[in-house]
Amino acid sequence: MLGKVKQALLAIHRDDRGAMSVEKILILAVIALPILIVLFVFRNTIIKWFNANTNDLNNNGTPLPNQS
Image 1 (cartoon, one colour):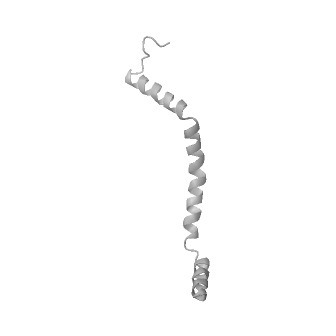
Image 2: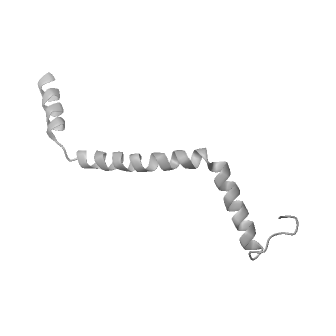
């Protein structure tokens, strides 16, 4: 019984088919995590910027009377 478990573990250890997938996932994580952190930290600033630009577009580029 123990021999079969040992053989199975050795076969899994020698098999490197999943290594490429793990590398791709790690590369995506290295790229995506900083982007997500920046979006999370600056979310209020980003929301205000989008709202201001949306309002500007809705007003055809002309500022509202109470804005300077």
